[in-house]
Image (tube, rainbow, N blue to C red):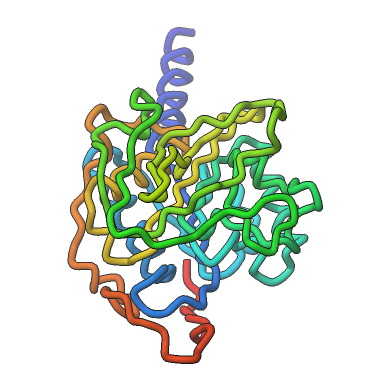
Length: 308
């Protein structure tokens, strides 16, 4: 009897150890962009995030599945603790079969998966939303950048030489190891966090603000988060526009902290610790911004090979 019990306990411990060793998986989805080189650089940004998340010195056991298309494999979507988007406006709406993408993403959200949008991936077009501005992203992530084509609300995109990003919830895990920082970038303003007076099932927490514009400053929400009733977590940050700004340690750590938090992992007391190689390692079209050609409204869309 005792021998049998010992064997049961032994094999149970093996099973527990196997599950404990299973890496936490993060899904990064890169959408299309038509911005000139050195700005957005979403393909290189996706590769940079994968490197940083898989080489965290104090948050081990994380694996990243990186896609430049909608991940069609249901097992990949089911394994993700959080899904991170980077691209020109919300990638599920820009990639083929938007309705199916949103339905499959909704299944992920219903099971408590996290969601993160970086810079313009927070954006929705007027054609994406209902006349009153409703869209699933509003409930999954707590807000979004409303493109000028929206009828209900218009967010603003402008580059500022020195925007200071100030914590408004400094005790939140996302701010661990980070300080207030200033950068030359395009932090979106007048972001849409729901209709005035609305009461969502879970409130949106503004994590960071910036006093913008300089000539008539007021606190603008530039990053926010939500903890949903389905147990999932949403995190948004409306930077960086310039690829070179990934070199800024406080910004980079802040974004990585937010992704880790959204995956329901413990953010270390001093924040995520990573080392970053030269930005050229991730094969951007350019590290420094390249101006658009005269009389050209948009550059050709950047493309990248499909990979995992």
